[in-house]
Image (cartoon, rainbow, N blue to C red; front, side, top):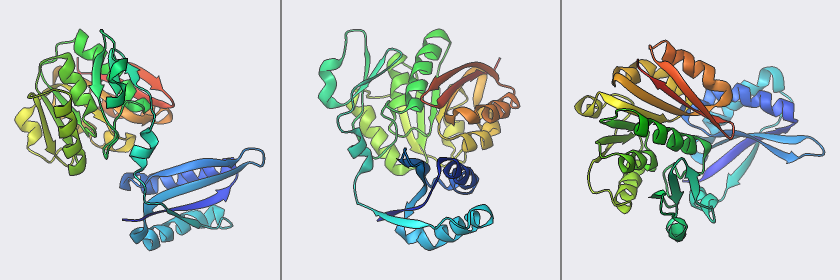
Length: 292
């Protein structure tokens, strides 16, 4: 299905203001939005939203309505994006990533594995999570600290993507791990990654939208819950997530921009969790909380 980009061209300050307007409107629909510097010398920036071409009329109408009160002078422009596997393209030539004791690498970098490394092999594919993003790296580092220092008898990887975090837990400790994702393609990719990393059993992968699936009650409550998603869904699901956490359990949350951390913390403090540690990576944070 062809994809397009709708965008406006303006100054850095106005682009940020447009992005702030778009965030509450489009973020919940998982439509990517971004600002991009075009010309540093002349202060030219673009604020963009990425979507399928079939949705153009509906999204353009809402984008126009959003701009009208304060930015009626900004004309919405359109770019048709080439049909490219952007995930695979963006990962070409990427080097292995170290996070804690983990080394996340592609098959072409197996020779980089050291004797003390816990190696996880993830190829470019259709699911998020290769270790190169600050959220994944932060989760891996926190998993290493939590699983090796606390009593963890089972774990949940919510929104597993590539399965890298579930694989990390299982490689650290021989415990059952439930890994779920709303996207069946991600679940399929994660299953392939689990097998390719030599894990024959112990990781259960299921397609599950939110907490509506019976998988959570069948496998929980959990000593460790990892959720590398986005700030808004994390805030909304706080009561349900904590309801599946065992007494004394730990929660690792990521997919959170630095400026969003206080809202996320407030939601989980309100659900009686205690903040333990925050890790900062490239403008993103990973938060470790526990249930005393």
